[in-house]
Amino acid sequence: MVHAIRIHGYGGPEVMQWDEVEIGAPGPGQLHLRHLAIGLNYIDTYHRTGAYPVGDLPAVIGMEACGEVVAVGEGVGEFAVGDKVAYANPIGSYAQERLIPAERVVKVPDAIAPQTAAAMMLQGMTVRYLLNVTYRVGPETTLLFHAAAGGVGLIACQWAKHLGATVIGTVGSDEKAELAKANGCTHTINYRSEDFVARVKELTNGKGVDVVYDAIGKDTFPASLDCIRPLGLWVSFGAASGPIPNFDIGLLSKKGSLFATRPTLFTYTASREDLVASAEDLFGLVQSGVVRIAVNQTYPLQEAAQAHRDLEARKTTGSTVLLP
Image (tube, rainbow, N blue to C red):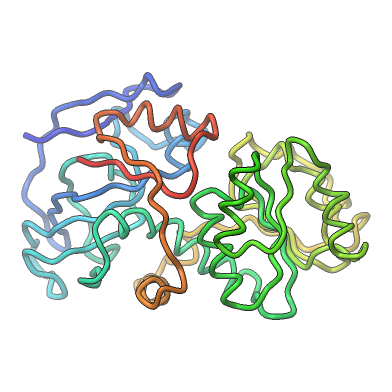
């Protein structure tokens, strides 16, 4: 028997329980993993609250981790016992051990430590599709990234700088502003003391940005649309402050014939080919030093509830890892 954090109902951090669970033998196409480090992501709070229902309860939550292969199911030829691997889907990472489809796992280079790997998969591959596919960022791009000092934000600032873009980032404190700038953010806006729309217009000489990346949701809508140049793109990829209310699509025409998308990593990495390509791009930039993964908080897995409280209170910066 091993332990896992499971939810028995939807609600606050208190619904997470430290339970004994049984892990059977891997079936065909499966791996049995012993986790070395587990990533914390905002989507975990959506699963906990029921904003994104997880199906039958009780359920183990958590989306990403790095682990060691301890058993291999029938028909799996790409992996062997002892391999260090990582993943960002499917749900179920808040556990000491688990079974997982081998097709959703990638091998981790020896040079990348387990805590780094656990902190980078979901957030790093998210940045990869945001900057390289959803909108192709380059030297001519000026972009606005909300929560620039968060886990996704710090990776995005570094990656966008590498691509030559001008990065404007919103943050919640002067300390977070310094952190974002140290990671490649060109200009920061403290949303607690500044009007971010007015500052974006000032920084772009009234033109607006090419693209806004928004994982905040309710608190930054519809103001984010006022930051975008005509024919620009609004990318809504999260809802940390709550869901965006339903709106008349005609608002996009009024704001300048804007484009809008609500992407997810799971669509962009649905095929094995896309998953491997995304992970390899990310591993390459981390190994070359272009992107540094800032694991700024660690918690024992058993204290996942406190990690959720700190994340939702915006007390964390960079990435957070749970240790089984």
